[in-house]
Length: 133
Image (cartoon, rainbow, N blue to C red; front, top):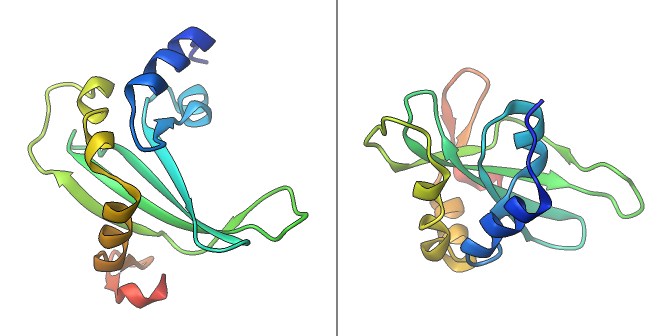
């Protein structure tokens, strides 16, 4: 299991802008550093945005919608969410320092525009209309 100090987490988070932060849970379970940000839609629904690398070392943004009933401990999500390419040029190495500058550009307003214009993924690898969320 990967290890990281609180100081290292704070250093990474201090370099990020607009409320982005290291997805510590993902790093501890999978050993890959990625950045996350959540935006509340209403009292029980929120969108989770993730900046990371895909298997071809391209920078992508994943969007998931969660329903969190007040009083419940866990949130629920449906489907595969959405995915959009941020940089199609593959990198030689998956470096967090290349993802951090994207946090300066990806404000709440920009993320909501991307969400609106990105189709939902279905289980068959087919895109469905964005109106689903």
